[in-house]
Length: 114
Image 1 (cartoon, rainbow, N blue to C red):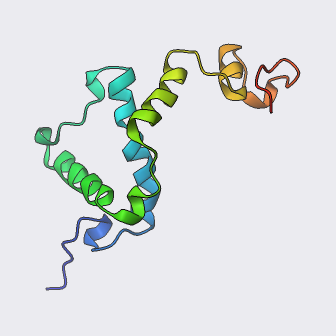
Image 2: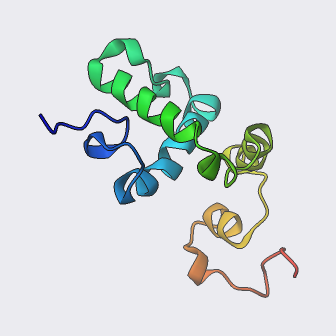
Image 3: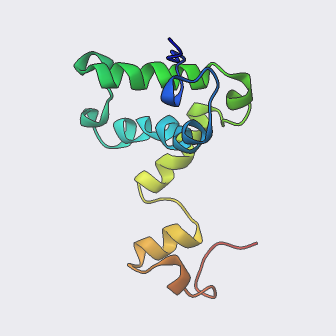
């Protein structure tokens, strides 16, 4: 039987395009639990699919080539927290507060300086 039993997409032993594409989003997902509420917590005991997901995420996080690209979690949470509480100062944050899209925001009024 040639069935692959690795932790990555399609049972592979090494991450491929699907794993590498989904990982940044999966790694950041706990931000919602932190800044919104517990409903966003992923509990692997709720289903076999969530258990596979958490095992996949752990396998990705166990790879040095992946972890070398990640920011320090607490620093990342602090950074994202400014967007969650509305105190971020960037062109995108200013535009959102103003009810516009970033490309519509007037650079002359933007309080972010180079």
